[in-house]
Image (cartoon, helix red, strand yellow):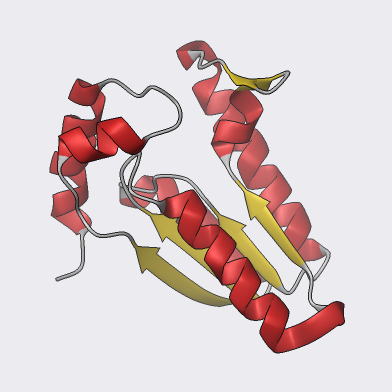
Length: 145
């Protein structure tokens, strides 16, 4: 099995929770030999267990996340997941290209659109509500119907 899952969703939509469910599902299905890697740009903003967002580091951290995603593909990890918002095509296309180059099957998983207030209450990284509202507007442009 060589599968890359590209998560899509606004902050607070449940991407990370869903990612864990994928891991549980495939771990049961494939057993002890199953390997996986989860790549989230948010991880690069963690410092001693605390999320500290620095917008000046966003591009650098996205680049590092993509590099590590590619490293997982090169190592033939069975399941490689990118757990970012991936709202705009320019966000997810580099991951798709990398996965295609390594002959991975690609699955896009689009989280449902939820109300901004609900996402604000659920998001773990204190993303401001006006940013979430902007994410929703952009997400609607590409959300498959």
